Amino acid sequence: MANQNHKGLKRIVNAFGYSVQGFRACFRHEEAFRQELYATLLLLPLGIWLGASGVERALLVGSLLLVPLTELLNSALEAVVDRFGPELHALSGRAKDIGSAAVFLAIVLAVAVWALVLLPRWL
Image 1 (tube, one colour):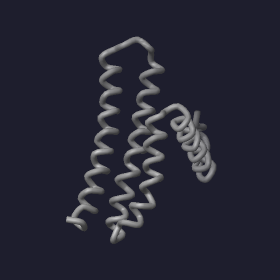
Image 2 (cartoon, one colour; image 1 turned 60 degrees about the vertical axis):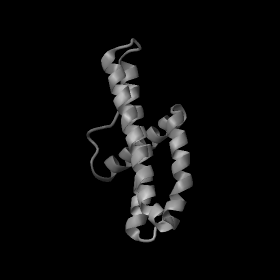
Image 3 (cartoon, helix red, strand yellow; image 1 turned 60 degrees about the horizontal axis):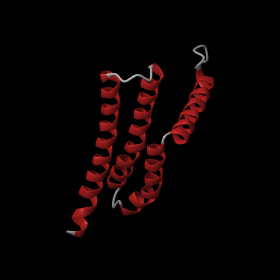
């Protein structure tokens, strides 16, 4: 748990450490995060190379980064729901489904951005 008394550089260093712990936990426990991270790492250099301008590169790379970012949030939500209790509950299911829908939408956004930026070059 974060120590609320730290300020300045110590707080920033602690926050970075907590972020690294979060990445490690999600990578270790979430197959979907690993798959999306591998896809992102594979496509990131391609997005930088294929972007004809800074704006295009930002769109291609930014849309990719939204996918694992959304998966991190979805995984955090699922962990909280699972921590609350193992019994089936409509609200728990709804929360998990909404988180999954957010990840799906991030993937759709990435595909749409890549298509809108790159397809006009070949059509």
